Image (cartoon, rainbow, N blue to C red; front, side, top):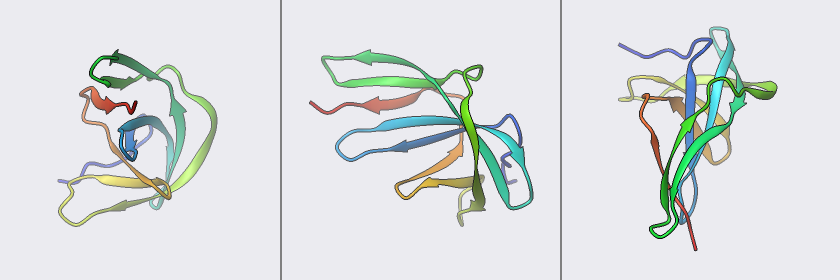
Length: 104
């Protein structure tokens, strides 16, 4: 069964080169082809010595103007995705803290 992006769905987008950054979004509107997303603030924990941490979305922190992105699926992936920008794809959040890393 395919997981669908619907209003209220939280989207995780991780990206980076030599480090892992995580951005969070919430779906505010959905049509058959497009989803409108709004940025969320992250709740983070950091271990500065190991340059690692975790990130979770704050669902009550939506800010900025919603923006539209096309919804698509990958073969073999069980849920819908959205292309956030040229370097990251957003996927439905699994409810677990996301791992992050830093670069010295």
